[in-house]
Amino acid sequence: MGVHLRRTAFSMNIRDRRDYSCAVFDAGGRLLAQAADIPVHLGSMAYALRGVVSGFRWRRGDMIVFNDPRCGGTHLPDITLVAPFFRGRELLGFAANRAHHADIGARAPGSMPLSRGIEEEGLLIPPRLIVREGRPDEEALASFVAASCSPDAEYGDYMAQIGANRAGLACLEQLVERMGKAAWAVALDELNDYGARLARTVFAAIPDGDYAFSDVMDDDGFDAADIAVRVVLRVRAPRIEVDFSGTSPQVGGNINCPVSVTASAVYYVFRCLLPDYAPTCQGVFSSIALKVPEGSLLNAGAGAGVAAGNTETSMRVVDCVIGALARALPSRCVAAGQGTMNSVAFGDSDWAYYETIGGGMGAGEDFDGPGAVQSHMTNTRNTPAELLEMSYPLRIRRYAIRRGSGGAGRFRGGDGLVREYEFLARSRITLLTDRRRRAPWGVGDGGAPGLAGRNLFNGGTLPGKASVLANAGDRLCIETPGGGGWSG
Image 1: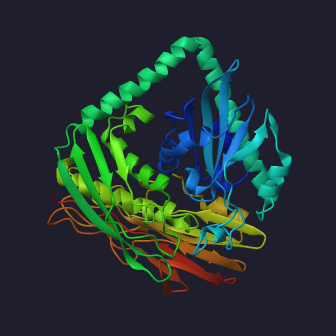
Image 2 (image 1 turned 180 degrees about the horizontal axis):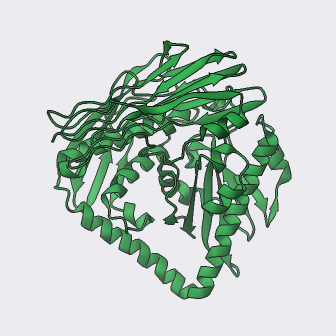
Image 3 (image 1 turned 60 degrees about the vertical axis):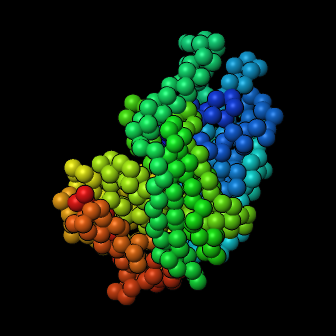
């Protein structure tokens, strides 16, 4: 599915950065398997797809589309298509993919605006049919692509997502044909039972107890600063409750998370404790319970801005859950990574581009943190400078490792990156970044924090969340954070 999507997508964001995810589910919407794509996409689908698919009377050839964060979406640019898998007249499962669309009609190019509400963040799509019994709904597609400054490419991306799901259905058809329907049904239950048993065995190594950790987001881009993210892990083998009750209320800016994104971050951390051969299915997460108060930063209400909750706050949730786990399993946990995706969006009335930038990972008990990598909740590639320059009125003046930005310690944190853009034409820039005021923490007495990130525009410092107008010749330089050092 992923290969098909990558090879047929029109946009650089999907085709080259590979900002997409693919998965298959059973007839009840339980996750069966997922590709090694974007953790923040797939955990959220595992958390919420059951509620979405139960609301439709499915027919062969149908597909639904949605991006609504209240229905298991992440933020509006991440658009999900779900297709039912039938064997005869019996519904046996679903194929799904989620892809980041670079322009969906937000108030700023790149559809990652500095916003105070979801109505400013672009086209909101509640779950609805986009393909009816094999026929794409061209009227619906026309309304979706009309929001984009590049409607032809946007249409091509939707068709690529439709094709990827059809490829997945064809493979499922071959698999069930080979196994037989009865064996398929048994195997699904056995897979989830195996995943649940394996997870319980691994999680049993966590001593019973309550383990707390807290950290802060720099700000929301408007009035709120030092916004608390607090977690308590209550381990009572084999169950683990992840309680975010002490977290700040939702804020006016768009760093709020839908609860599906919070679930993704939690699932990701516990999945990292499992061996590589563990299946990534619903059963793996059956021992984990979430407690996330409604109206909080991590379970925002309807209408809240969430564009950067997906990219920035999700990373802080990961840091906090790792920090709490380190109280129980210090040898298994790492120092804080860069804690941001460094979201950068550019464009004008006729073009838009969005990317995230890698940074440093935290060090561990017996290894230095990797440097200059996408980390934790994101897993995209970088956009090659040559391709960016051929496609947009931009020039990459510098792309380098930010030497010495990783925290010192017995094992060093990974270094961040420096990426400097020169604008060749007028452009609106939006930055949604974090860890500019508070550095990624280290572990142990000698584990130093990594360097905080910096955003520079023509040599002057910009805040972590900012919107500025660039003219031809202006330069933007992003210096991403390094990871924390380890000296446990």
